[in-house]
Length: 181
Image (cartoon, rainbow, N blue to C red):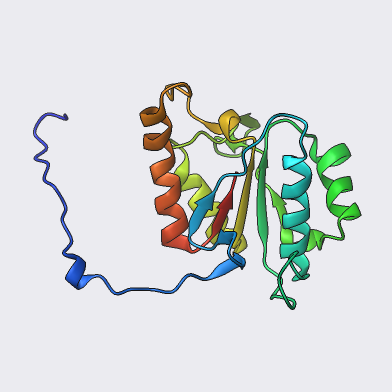
């Protein structure tokens, strides 16, 4: 606890909460305003699926198992393992993406200097919020999630992961983006 700072619990009566219906990026699978985790072992195609989702979002193409097209939306990709020039862009092109709606968040820099580090969750959530607002993104893809977790997040402790991801969930709710990792 910080000295000289009084803290208090924030309570909301459920009687004061107005129910909302779910708005779907991909019907019954990926909601806007929330985070969705794609889990699986390495090499099972999670990155390829993420690229396909980004391409479909950028063009408004129909999602699998759902009827009709949607409005094209901007997408932000955070990728730690793949080159934007020789992997990400060729995958997006092959998937038919609209490159003008696809953005790669390469990292964080100070002032006008070089990129100095990857985005760190939860520490750099305000910078991700700024990028979402700047681009108008409605979909954020983080691949792989663990590469973007702050150094102090213990990935072997459930409560440490949950505490790190809660600000990401709050960002999704606040901005209405679908966050997929």
